[in-house]
Image (cartoon, rainbow, N blue to C red):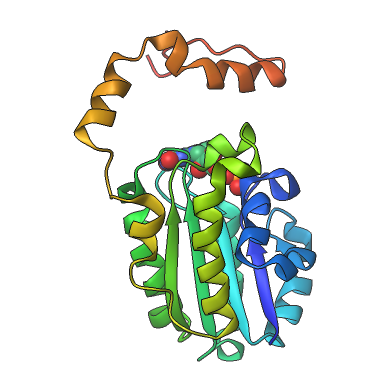
Length: 214
Ligand SMILES: Cc1cc2nc3c(=O)[nH]c(=O)nc-3n(C[C@H](O)[C@H](O)[C@H](O)COP(=O)(O)O)c2cc1C
């Protein structure tokens, strides 16, 4: 089996996408095509043409996929006869915890794979709340790791993803009323701690009252 894994994160090797790929398939972590390296797209395409199956892992960006991921999809489309009939799997993960956000994009994946590429679409895994991976240790993601192993197993056997995989991972499509209530009453400084922390790492400050568009 020759599987090619595409990492569609603009953060490349330092991304949450990179962190979760070995949770799906340990061996896949050795040979990943990073789509933030657009100068390598021709090399990736040559390599992909000899593969048996494909896995795309990318973050949700503004309710869609990162531009680099779309750019690579379009590059593949130019060579679609080389990919016709081959199994393809997708993982979309998002900063916000609600799975419902990534649903429209998962339908696009199915459309892209089957209607545009003529590939064998095997399903999309949706993972909410992935940004927390930047701060938490592996042990905090035990349940996710167990479920991603099932995904790896399906990939190895060229099977469709288990039908209930997204409910196993996310429990529900939206946050429960209780969690929404908790979020609403959480004080601003606590809610925004992480974003200030990340901006600080880059020597930046966030002005929450800023209105760049007037
Ligand atoms: C430009 C940009 C847009 C984003 N848009 C969304 C979004 O629409 N919904 C969401 O839940 N998370 C969004 N995120 C958060 C990312 O999906 C999240 O941080 C993810 O874990 C990043 O994964 P990576 O490290 O593999 O790139 C966005 C992040 C960036 C930088």
